[in-house]
Length: 544
Image (tube, rainbow, N blue to C red; front, side):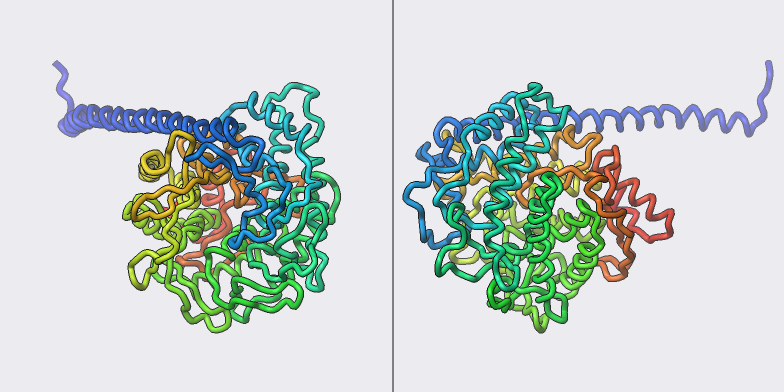
């Protein structure tokens, strides 16, 4: 009998002891992955049913009008009302523009329903016209209609979407170009800032209001820029860019912008600044325009604006409002639109700050069952008149981005909770209804088009990211995907260094410019590793 040395025997015993544990650990991890994969599949199917419950009811009871009234199973021609709180100047003969169908097209592709997508494209190609006597809000029509058409055109010309050959001949792009030309009349002002309201048939009406919001004139560059790239007509991008530059020139010495302004005089009307209603998509479009078009100018604007936000608005996990001239706090309140901010922070790699704010928004969601429109932080109470929840997508949007960046299964749990709340409180026989008062869960007879274009879409992508595999997209503020193409890049953008982010470590731009053949998460990992190789300091926990 051969006697092994004592040291070898010890190692053999250790090996025999450790191996089963390693095997068990490996099996446990595999079981965990399998469980998560099965759960995500179940959740994605539930979201699919949500979307079709909303979409089918719209098509049955409201199409071709703009939006569904789910409680009465009727319709509303709401494109002329969007952004119009007083409901003034309503047209007599406007009969809708199939708004909810336009908003649903990209969602249908993401769900893999190419047959219904093609039917929608065909109907719009044959029936939609913008030569109508209807006064519309430029910002809302841009993000919903123009963005929906441009995105759907790109998806329709993508060979992987398997449209019947020869049935599509750029009809959606033709419609988008016609709409874009009508938009151009709004920019005929001394400042280049566009009117907030324009009549699709007649242009800017006599005695039209000259007041607009920062978002209204600073969040047009993605859709109008994409339209220029697709048509070869530079006028659309030029008009949006001129307005954005003028708006940026109006910033205070603190790099802050107010909420409302006059498009003729170029003077501020409301000096209180924040990241919520009236300003939110301005920040979003600066960074996304940089990613999509590669123009360094957008990055420099965003970098300065982001640092100012962190310096003057941030208070722990919250963001209050402040006077753009002094930086002193004005309103201590949470608005539901602010919930987009963690998603934006993911795009620039400020993941720890994104996670912190996201958890606070989710805490408020759990407190009321949904996210109220406005919550007074200084009094820890609801705003007395803004207690509603109109099926907004911003919290689930940020949840989607954070899961893509971290792969933390906790965000899947958050998504499930949001989905359950929507089904519990807002689902009715005729679709999904807005909530008028979160304290009573009283419903309102309105299913907003963004429920189809954003809320359901981001929930689905959270659980099933198949659409994102081997593609990189920027989602507009209305959730419409635009591909990141090297041919749209003006030049390969420089990587800028910043030492003023939320973290004391340097955070560099995550969503890089080229069209990498990776998923969003893979791209995030590659960028973080690449930045570390270059010598940048990045927070390790943010990308594991």
